[in-house]
Image (cartoon, rainbow, N blue to C red):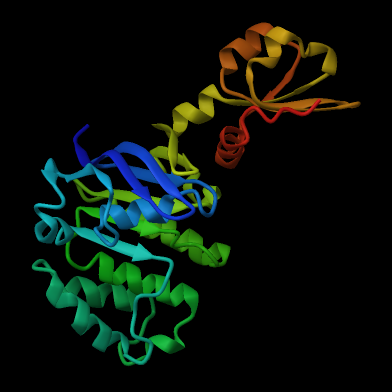
Length: 288
């Protein structure tokens, strides 16, 4: 697969937080979920990619070219949606669009108006009157109206109800039907990614813990339950997290094949993305 974005050894230090050699790449034609708890480094990484904060070191390439040296051309082909507001509250949707549209050489007014219509938005409405869900839809309309190749979204579903979140997932799937498109979707609500993600990148405390295909992660990891007699020094090593009580054990294991071989009497279930994320973040914190 062709990488659309390549991040190599990205470092950024603040008073109480640091990105530590963050390295990953995004493939064309993929929706990549960027997961982690609040404060793990997702937004800092995205702001560094977009040049909204200055990195201390590292390189960022978009379609093989250095972002810092080709920032204008690169951003012309990137759409972005942030959880935090970046609109002028007293402007109407039409007025705000008139501020943003000139920044993009590929702005397509017809596409924009089609999104406005399909999202049920009104151009003469003031941004201050929009609900959080409508703000998100408006931000998506702006991000997708200049034929972007990469859509970067930072916590777009935070605070939204399940129906609006589901609608956003459908919008992203429609966007991906066009060849060469990619999405980088940052979220701590991992259930949003069950339906749409191809790849998952986990960041915690400023470090990348894994960068894997979603289906591979779900197939190789397992939620395991059973009698405490099944836990030995050998089987304990299979678990990322293991919780034991007088009634038995439950844990997340990273090697389903060996679990089936070494603990054939255990109850094995497919984990959720959130199970795997929390297991890696809390890895080693086994309770007896």
